[in-house]
Image 1 (cartoon, one colour):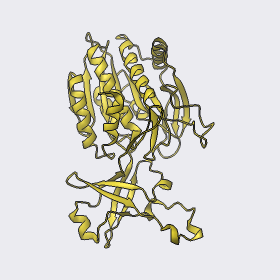
Image 2 (cartoon, one colour; image 1 turned 180 degrees about the horizontal axis):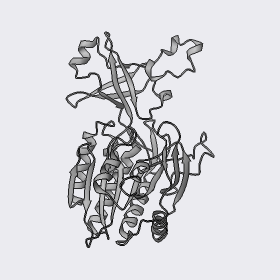
Image 3 (cartoon, rainbow, N blue to C red; image 1 turned 30 degrees about the horizontal axis):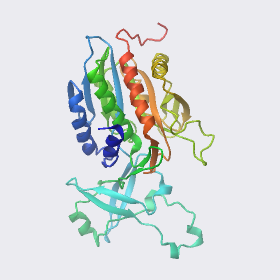
Length: 363
């Protein structure tokens, strides 16, 4: 299966943060033939081990999160309408009129729409107002609360954007949950390549959980594995559209991205300055492959690597990514060639990662 085919499969699987079972099962199935050991942990992280050519004390963890943003049902009123709370960074300004899916207690899918004020009766003072999440409601077609419950929808049920995968020109795609199903597709490609050509150190391929719920899963996986170094695979915000011009220089089709600085100044006060030895390895790999490597430094976004770096005595971490437009909207847009080159880059970094890698700074 090609990376674009795997990406489409993954993007069409609704799996909210904390409810990752559907994508977990898909990833387990795809990694089974490319791993020496395969397991899940208590939180639901998928951990595949690829053994090294020779035993060594060093190891490398390569991870991408499986979960996606969305909402959970907060209440069901007598007329059968649902209210919700956000899970992760759902932008309220895009919600009105959006199609959604709800996972029932029996793991079935119920369709719904987020209600919006009828255009014909919209007063002037409502035309340009974004409703906060506490004011929105979901209509699933039910006539009353009893019908909603009979459909298997109850308090706490996960709500997600209606899954979609649209092919655009120039091998570009717009899809739900590109964040981080693109990363999931990449780590399977990496596992496939490393399983055939054994690396110098044990490599752990991890599909992590609850990244969108305050970056929880990957740190738990790292606490078990205690890797020497780790590579986070996630998207980076492309600013090559008219409204984002100048925010950064990331462009679709210009190759994978190496994170040089990240910090999230709202709520989650954390970020990552990459380990210099990992930067050198990535640059060497990109040069040897002839891959154009974009760089970014940003405030307002971060990845699981922010916490993985703090595990044990410290983990040498770096963020590798691909550029993506319209993040967290349900129409996240990427170019397949960037993902293909990212998979090659990560594979090469893992292949050249030295058995005698010394993570301590100043040595």
